[in-house]
Image (tube, rainbow, N blue to C red; front, side):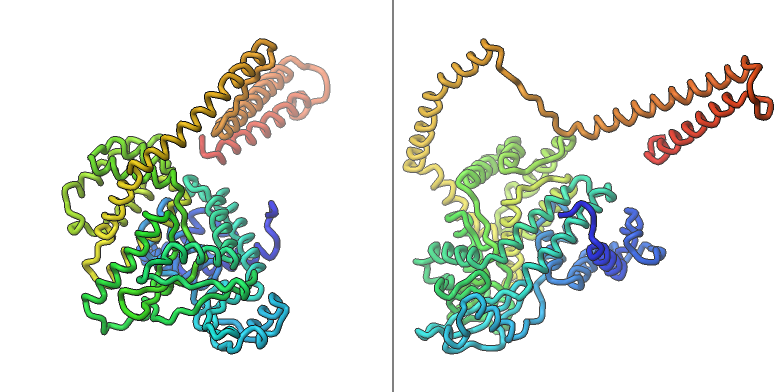
Length: 555
């Protein structure tokens, strides 16, 4: 990305600022000195209704700005360490709602990618899409062998538009980092980096196909869950062809289902994700109602849209297991360390506050049965704690947080007394049992033993090398400081000001002495010209020093 904004970026940034003002966020621009982005520099006022309903207004603003910003809002809905809970809950409702592109463009993309006409590839191809999103749209088609398929075609120009919007987001991130001190606790550039990686993965239809194949293998023997087969012969970088699942989206279910049927459906959806998370360590990352189909009955579901898949490593599962065990045996003091091992970071100055909040949260629910706990309330409390303490969350767990929160919301929507924790309990218990099974313990001991033997064999060579370098005077120790740049800058500024102050003082003193003792030479107003010049120069330097101190806010 260029270091300086292009003219087109500045124009688009100005447009975004005007949209923000239209949705009531002008007061934020004024508070953080961003008013120069708005043509005309009109007066920006505080609207209390916007502050109280900021999440709803932010969602409406992102929807107006377009598909890339909607997806960015969806990413932010997974970041309780960046946004407060009330905004998070609103952004979770963001969905792609874009007009489908013309069928002529669909035909052109397919012919370009396959170098064949659409008619030669498919016996039938519906012109009207069954679904449309910001990156692509899905059409129903029939292959020459008679198989009914869903063909996902990428929107023409999508990669170029996304790269343009990413460039704009990077420029906005730079401006926010420079001007908005309230966001110092957030690495804004890293948030945009994360979004860029995510949306670029969604552009890769081959990756989406591999994700679907992996989940299909996981549920190959499960009659309750269907994952569509990928037809790789009919798949290209911009075209993904997969089995067509006949069913009803969870979002389109009518009210005719009985309470028992709705409870069965909620349990089936939750169990599917619990198996993915706890058994396989790889899970569908976007379980919103449009991506879940109800097939022949409420106990059989189908999954679609595999652009986002989360993964947990074996080490992650081991750390989660230790966290579960410490929570189960009431070892509350170990919970901060367990969370640290999982990648949760707390500002050093607030570690004691973090430990206290954890302890209070733990004992608030200690002794209560899972049936007595409201999962949505727990999730809200956790998000509030994360935001209020400025905790840093590991990126690989953000998708898991979102999936669990979405599952809980979907379950409650289907049946109000749904409790995702009750569903998760046996899966978590089974995870602990598997992690400490005799076979796994023996396998882990063997692996660790092999590693220790390797280290033992290498240790003499390593020690010999260190001792040799020490004896020959070639041992070097590198020192790298982190986080001292600001302190070094402040010391440098203070030293420079001190030097200028000495120059001013010397100039004033020297000019005074010249004025007193110099009786010859040109004079102005009865004072030696050199003395006058010294007073003027010292005065200018003194005023410049005073202005710099006032601007720094450290007067």
